[in-house]
Image (cartoon, rainbow, N blue to C red; front, side, top):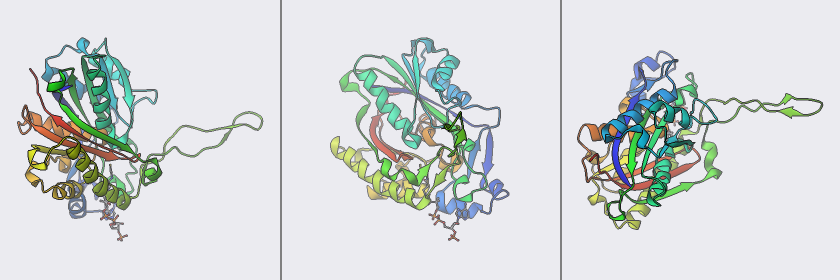
Length: 329
Ligand SMILES: CC(C)(COP(=O)(O)OP(=O)(O)OC[C@H]1O[C@@H](n2cnc3c(N)ncnc32)[C@H](O)[C@@H]1OP(=O)(O)O)[C@@H](O)C(=O)NCCC(=O)NCCS
């Protein structure tokens, strides 16, 4: 599987820390020092998750110089679909990828990494030749904008990568590890509203709908700074790679302190840590491809570069992948 091209899309509105301090009791200083976030992008009411995903996917196709109808699959990693039955088919139609099967994959902030590894399996078996993996989320829909402990952290966005089948020697997915632990899932949830309504006679039914994001920030922080270094260590050992061989560390963008702590654990210089969360906050499944696309387009990530990537978040779920960026032909 080769990583051929990338694309991304930003939500329309920019909300600064100062803007948020007009809504909740917080400050630019608190948010910057605790998280590294300076502003985030929030979708307007007329901007759908599908819009973001289609824009990001179209840019990746354009960079790859691929006609949309040459795609075999569109895999959409999202926890915030426009339609609970699945948003990927609408994205496929919007991209005019008429020959592609399309479905959603949900694994919160690990979603993109899980989707990338899933896509690689189809490409490696020869079942497919070209796949578009899109990570897109609009967590702004599910944030309680009056809860200062969560609302400062999240934003909306989308990122995409175009993947192509390749020989085993040229495979750009050099190794991966994926983990889940539902027993710790309570520390970060977007749960159903518990309901019990009369149906007929003595029967009752539930009603669909979600509470805002619920998070124990300290538990999630401890989880990230323990599990991300551990899984990256496993990945490096599995692939006989040293931290010095890495060109970039491409982590899920949740908190600058988490990025710095992980880099320090491996003595990776901070100049090799890709970070754009100052401008976007945590955009869930979209952070990794959004960051990758930015770094590809400004020339930091170049063909042949080796990247260690790790996603982590609700589930709990986490994973790591060693990637070699190929770029377009
Ligand atoms: C959320 C997070 C930034 C909070 O930082 P922290 O240092 O743990 O802060 P605490 O939760 O201990 O809160 C410290 C104080 O700041 C206050 N506080 C919380 N949010 C605040 C805000 N936005 N502005 C000002 N004060 C705030 C708290 O009420 C608390 O006040 P108290 O001491 O009077 O009770 C941090 O825990 C974190 O980043 N966790 C990981 C979250 C994450 O990445 N989630 C997504 C994973 S995919």
